[in-house]
Figure 1 (cartoon, rainbow over the protein chains, first blue to last red):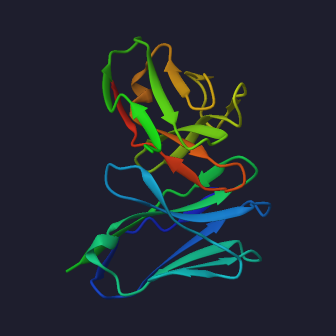
Figure 2 (cartoon, chains in turn green, yellow; figure 1 turned 60 degrees about the vertical axis):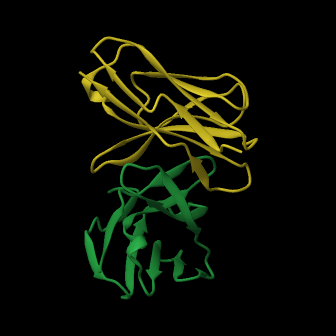
Length: 108
Length: 112
């Protein structure tokens, strides 16, 4: 079983729609959780951290369920510029483990 | 403030050649990391350095060596390149008490 599992997609979503990504992780001792965004042929960039209480940053909402070892990302009112690969990332003491990513394409 | 920089951006090697990938950060971060990214595999950790003078193996260290030259610089060396090392290599750095990592722009390596 992979340490971090994501649906690879692709998700093709019309502009303005709401889209949700899910991710599960296997290490119950994981301490930190993030969503990263990666554009084609570019480096991963931090989108947001994920907290147990849930957190929101503009159109983006992230949720963490430690009991189920499940992380989610919700994007509301999607924009063309949201097209990218979204990486679910889980951290321990020193290291991060990356999911393989979910590819999102926003269609005009 | 350049963040994390990597050189070179692109490189083509022949099997058996050696090269060093350079990485530097100007954010005064303690920890630095080298990853490789291959299609369908996600990012895999090669080596990391929690502080100046220390290095540790990651998930895929075979065929690589690293040097933490000082707090700013962390280099990755391929002593004898193999076609299986064709990949995109990313360097990253991290604050001690902030779990997130910040990535350089990557080096695209092709080994023929």
